[in-house]
Image (cartoon, rainbow, N blue to C red):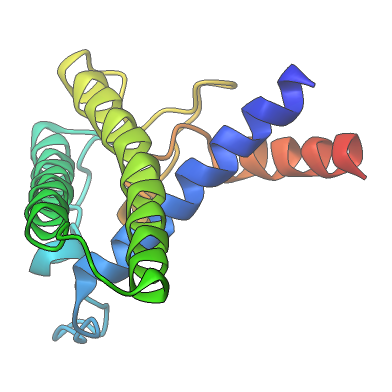
Length: 174
C-alpha cells in the first residue's frame, strides 16, 4: 500500500512537471538557426563546445538558470492563485454558483499541491548543482545526458534506469 502511495506521489509530481512545462512555455518553441528548438523560458538549448567535459561550469550554469526561472514562474502562479482566491471568495447567493466556485478552487489547490512537489524537486536539482551531483543517474551513476536534462531538468535517472523503473512499476500495478 505504501508503494502505491509512493507511485502516486511520483505520478502526481511528473504530471505537475509536465503541466507546468506546458504552461510555462506559453508559446510554441521556435527553431533556432541550428534547427534545434528553444528550451524553457526562451533559454536556448546548451550547445557543448568541442571536447567540453560533461557538466562543466557552463553547463551547470545553464541548467541552474532554467531551474531558477522555472521555480520563479511556479512561485508567481502560487501568488496569482492566492490573489484570485481572495478576490473571488465572496459569498455567492446561488447555491450552484457557490458549488462551481468551490470546485474550481479545489482543482486549483490540487494543481498547486502538485506544483509544490515540483518546486521541491527543482530545489533538489539546484542543490545537486551546488554539490556537483547534477546530471548523473542516482541509480547507476552514468551521465543522464544534456538532451534529456533539457527536456526534464529535474531528471535524476538515466533513460535506461527510468525505463526499468517504469517496467517494474507497471508489473507491480498490473
